[in-house]
Length: 226
Image (cartoon, rainbow, N blue to C red):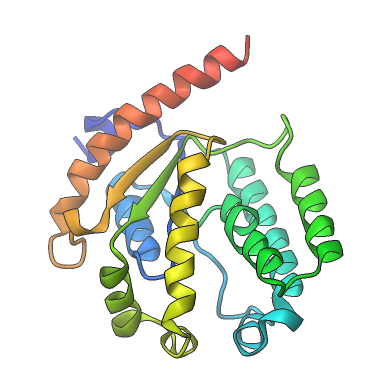
């Protein structure tokens, strides 16, 4: 019996991994997909035409970057649901508006008009009864020190040279965001409680916790349909 059957994870589940840079979203996505025999959906970074420009000049490129991410994530979300489930998704569509766009507007690196345009587009695409939300959002959290160490070890060059003050702010904004998030059920996992690189079997306790959360999610969705 595989882990999906052992813990009664529905084979059409959509599970999204969220968390700030450095928490190991890609590693978790890969490990869960392997353990459950699910497909993966990874954030497209390498061919992003705005990312490096953004790190050089937040004010000029923040709006462009957020629109690009919104379009790409929406297309990916649509594709996932058209396939019919059984997906682990690296990063959620909700983080862009709840954290990044909001941060740039509040710090003055995105104009009010750009922010309102972005929010209106996001709401029209995502915040409607017609947008199918994931069964579960797994939020990976950890101390700022642990996250900074991971960025220095595994991060991209442009992340390693970003001021620490930026990551401090992102860490706090993520905590504020997840504490008020209610678009789908959440499972919070501390990155200090497992090591998927050194101990592959540490994925099983996480799947056990997921099982309970997904069953609750399915019951909630059933009630909402009546």
